[in-house]
Structure formats: structure tokens, C-alpha cells
Image (cartoon, rainbow, N blue to C red; front, side, top):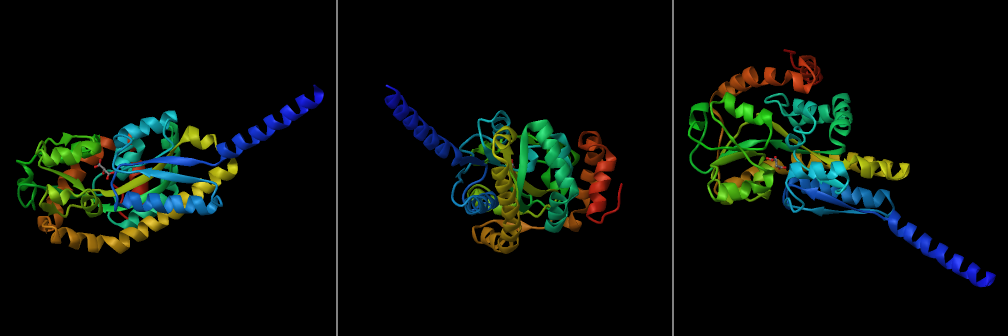
Length: 334
Ligand code: MLT
């Protein structure tokens, strides 16, 4: 009997070891708001590659593109409760859960890719990572840089605030963006990202804004024909990991994930630098007319910064927070 028990114990421990081995090998699920060819996908693929390399092939991750796992805002909730491992989404869709992140969505604060890199990878970015863990239960581990959000519509060329007045524009469910359009005199239509293509196609809305890379990857040229080169928001699209999933990992795996996120961030910046001009060209070839706003966007800038910034000082952590951001990118404080 004792011998039999011994054999059984050995069998149990081999099985236990096998289970432990299998449990240690991770295949993280990553929700991705955008489709193939997007900046989000580029960062996601770079992250998967770095994760596999750094873990010696032990871990991998799978991208679920095109909002398959739900709207971008829903994925924040899912990650917060730990039913989803990771998500790649526009920062404006995190702001409702962690308002201080809104400092990166305030109109005309970030004026270049270099500004975006400096802010996200410096102490301000680190502070927002911590705030997001505290407020939303998700940890930002990488940053996708997608370029300025350009206004598209299916009706007419828009170069001035006056041209906007009879258009129905979709915006994310984000107060700062809603107030920005209000400062330009129109009441926009908040709509989840996952519903936007259909909204444009069925003409529930006339237009929306997103970067060239996103407009192209999402095939918006099939349902939109005018682009206005606004620069009111430089789109930053973080890779987030559920904090509860992250805390469940070994210290070594946490380190691997953080490093893979950093590596993917560098690749994302390069992806934008390498592809934006060609993608803009491609959009023209696909029939989109691209125009610049009149007077260097002066009226858009004046209305938005004047009306919108002060409304959000409190939620971003005070006017001094905005000033820290402005100073970090070499601009005059307010
Ligand atoms: C949005 O407009 O909701 C986002 O920018 C979508 C995205 O992730 O590209």
C-alpha cells in the first residue's frame, strides 16, 4: 500500500508540475480598438515580438483587432476587473476613468510627436501611469503615437469654424472633446469608437476626427471624402494591462512586460515617422480631398484654448499641472 501511495504521490506531483508549467506560459489577450494596418496594431505586434523574445518564448500575446472585444471604454472596465489582460486604445477613452489623463487631450497642448514622446516618457507620463492605476485599475505599459486627429466629413470642404456649423460630428465619449466642439459652436454626437464606421456609413453622423493612420486603417475613405488638417489633439494610444493581472505575475515577468512595452513604444514612434507622409498621400489617391484650416487654424486655436482649458483645470489636477506640461515642452505657462 505504501509503495502504491508513493507512486500515486509521484504521479500527482508530476501532474502538478505540468499544470504549473502550463499555467506559467502565458498567452495574454490584447483588445485592440483599431484594425489591421493601424498604429495600434504596429505597437501591438512589436509588443508581442518583444514579449516572446524577452521571455525566451515562454509567453506570447494575441491581438483581437477592430473592437472585437468591445468598445474601447468597455475594455477599460474589463481590464479593471481582471477579465481582460490588456487593451490598446486612444487615451481619450481612458480619461473618463482617470480624469488627470485629460491633460494629454486638452486641445492644442501637444504640438508634435516630439512633445508627445517627451511628455509620455518623462516624469509627467510616469505620474499619469500611477494615477491611472489608482483611479482605473489599469497600468499603462506602452504608448502608441498616431499623429494629429484630422477632421473628416462626407459633405464639404471645411477650412473655418463657420464651415463646421451645419455638420453633425461624432466625438468619443470624452468631455474635453465635446466641449472643444462646443467652443467651435456645434454640439457634437458622442459615440463609441466601435460604432463609428457604421454611424458614418448610415449617415447618422457626417464626420469625425482621427489621425491619417487611423482614417486609412479603418477605411473611412469609403464613407468620407474631405479631410481638414486640424491639429487640436495629438493622438496618444496607450497599451494598458489589468493591474490585477500584472500583480499576479512574478517579478521577473513584470519586468519583461514593462521592458517589452518600452521597446514597442520606441517602435511606434518610428512607425509614425516612417509611414505618416505616405499614408496621407494614399488617402488622396483614394479620393479624399485634404485641406488646411484657414489662417493657420488661428480661430480654432483661440476658441478652444480660451474656452476649454479653464473648464478642465480642476479635473487635470490644477492649472499648475497644465503649466508643468507646457514648461516640459518649452512653452509659456498660462
Ligand atoms: C476614438 O476616436 O474613439 C479613438 O481615437 C479611436 C482609436 O482608438 O483610434
